[in-house]
Image (cartoon, rainbow, N blue to C red; front, top):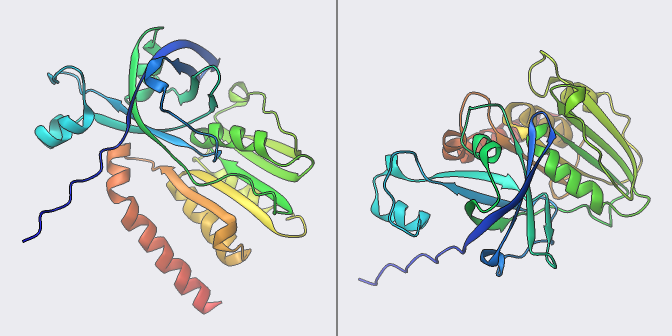
Length: 283
């Protein structure tokens, strides 16, 4: 019997916190640097993401902390937490990686870490991945998402071709969560203040009420999985946007943490694709 090929080991980066900044009441910016970023590279995409690795409290991990070794040698309940975050910016010359964290108090793993982070603290991560950047071939651009998608939307706005018609919709808790967004595009940026409304409700309403510009649009829609599902069907089926001109995915799902969401995401997407195929056949 042939030996099973050994899985290629992912590149683990070890960065150090250089500085932090509270840019809105619920958004914390962490700038990382250090020699551990010597082999890191990003820039091809505006939705680059990294998989941050956090030790579980109470677990005695061998030093130096190695997340892949922990997953190989320890029971699942002792595996480190893995959390996915967008690369807000990568400054190759300065060797600085910027990540923005949504912070909701003591809940979760990454947000509390960012709130407590101090210069010199270590953060380990794999990546980057990614697959979207505003196309220069598009006639216009559409960007929409909640707080989780805001870093990618901000990075994408910075890369929209100069003068390109752009419509951006960002849903946040309230006006205090707005932040300056720069773009060379001819952009209309709309902030939607959620208040007590369900996550994504205002986004769905805004896109359904949008007068789409003429020509081929390139859309980026990300955030909570339930409203993303609704907008995916709207854009793909009702508006007929081709799949290759649409980057759309749930970054998270209400009622579950990332571990639960990632474990069921493939099945979730499969069901959505089946629903779309049925709807397309009936139309």
